[in-house]
Length: 339
View 1 (cartoon, helix red, strand yellow):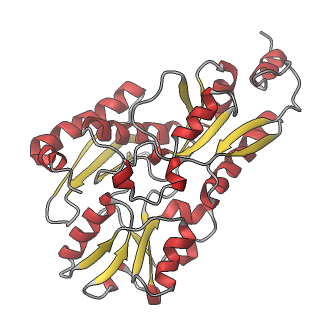
View 2 (tube, helix red, strand yellow; view 1 turned 180 degrees about the vertical axis):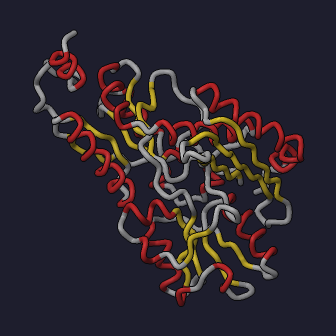
């Protein structure tokens, strides 16, 4: 196939004549402001890449309509199942997910064609009176819907010589920050990436160091998913992939899978690259944590190895650390569900 025909093929979607670049690609997205912002950024990149229009198709997921605590409804997949169903029914051509929402098991019919460069993976504190975490008063009420955050925030508070009350909350960014503005809570914890993507990073009063609070596996990264059968679209979207981000989140999610934990479990993980003396990236460090939500018990370990050159190597790095954590007592914490 010559280069012109290859380009046309890459720009061809379902039911479209080769070379016709006017039929829009349909991008499935959740309806939230954050999801729409994330999907809009991907849509812009795909338009620039392909020269084709991209339209956003808004889809409501179970996680969007349920008011139950995420831990109660399972967490895993509640924000992605409806999007995946739309892909499989051919109602959309590709979908954008927050990677941390994806179950670790990948359906054979679908493929994550691209994982773009990661945003800031840290958690952010939005507190009254501009307070940092260490400035919060003893007994401060801190809102989060994440058992992972609860475990580490309570542990961090203990290390700082104080106690806090972690309060389970749900809702979008406006709702969560509203609890602080209305005086119901002293602070809430959100993903820094989400605040950055909707232009509200200035509302964060503290960025929590990953030395104190490890993020959720895949936090800050996006997953662009389409059907495996659409090989041309898979190849085209693959041009948005960042190999270092993919290696890092693959290792993190491998750790999560090996611990047999769902996304609502109190598991944190972060893989980052380390530069050698010549400033070239030579190693990857993977850190993981499992804990009880009261912060009384944490198992936190790390491992470092060469930057994974393949999916299998990244998976092996995650499994290696998970085995060490299980040997150090993580299995008991998971058995108690630590919720």
